[in-house]
Amino acid sequence: MSTSGAAPRSPAFGLLFYALGILVVAGFAVGWLPEVSSAHGHGIDRVIRYLLLTTGTLFLVGCLVLGRFILTYGRGAPQEGAVLSERTQLLWAIVPVLLMCAISEVGVLVMALPVFGEVYGEPAEDAFEVEVVGKQFEWLVRYPGPDGVLGEVDHDKVHDSRNPLGLVKSDPAARDDIVLRGQLHLPVGRMSIVSLRSLDVIHSFTVPLFRTKQDTLPGYTAFTQFTPEKEGTFELACAELCGLGHYRMQGTVTVQSEEELAQWLSEQEPWL
Ligand SMILES: [Cu+2]
Image (tube, rainbow, N blue to C red; front, side, top):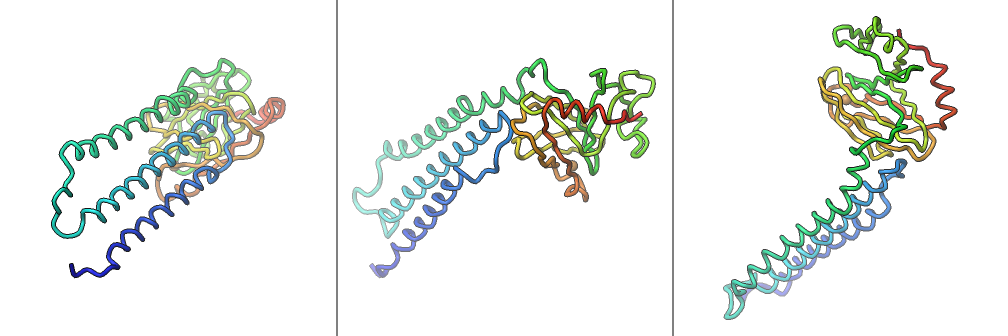
């Protein structure tokens, strides 16, 4: 055989790089996520870590097995007895598939479903209700006002400066609605339910530290719910490339105590 002794080392080096990559990812997976600040967010982080660690480990094991096969069977014509039996080949094909199924099913059923239930299940009865509407390129936030009811809106009445949400003046429930640009105030420790609409294209309501993300679609009202855990100011962003000004489609989420929130709301003027 003419190959020099250096040839088998290159796959070994390749494997070393794979292994290092996986170890780095796995190491960071435990602590690289930004601080979480909502009740369901811990579950989301658990799912992310679980997926990174399981699929990362599988990937590494796959590379090791592949490397072993290349080193053992990859040079020259197969020798007597070097070809695996059909049964063994079948096992090598089926076992990884079953393993992947187990990983994904455990991930879905045990870890992800309870979180899904928290985000899309029945909201708490005392949930704080607010509406957030996306438009190019800002978030409009509507609070129901003292009557606790979001009034009627009419898309034909939308005017960017005079009536950005198209509130209907003849509806008493709409007359006390408060509309603000990019300022979402929420109570701490109590579930918030946000109804989401869009006035133009698809946007995505995203509060990274709440691990909350929900698309807003024109002509459709979507909902998302979460319970903020800590007081403070958080970033509200759009996670759907929605046009040239997408980058500036930001707002702030202020989480405060019930008293502070009630005080702040009482200081806001109704839009109409
Ligand atoms: Cu957007």
